[in-house]
Image 1 (cartoon, rainbow, N blue to C red):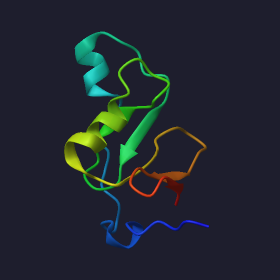
Image 2 (image 1 turned 180 degrees about the vertical axis):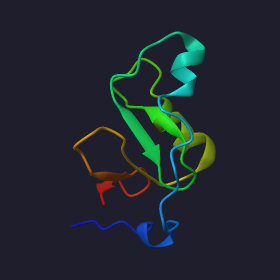
Image 3 (image 1 turned 135 degrees about the horizontal axis):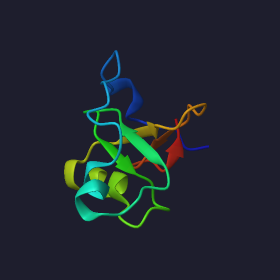
Length: 86
């Protein structure tokens, strides 16, 4: 089973969200399906089911490896680099 090699390098405590919703969706006039929080910097982006896929775009632009769900009642994390739940 593949393991994440990036989780140990995350900041503690995790960063505060920089926004309440996806700022790129607001800018573009689209609506996020679900939100994701970058665990390196606190960027809030929309999921891949959203039109803009801004969380993934943030990862590609920044190389920040791990995000977590920013949805109430959920607590999973995803490593974009290792392609595993953390």
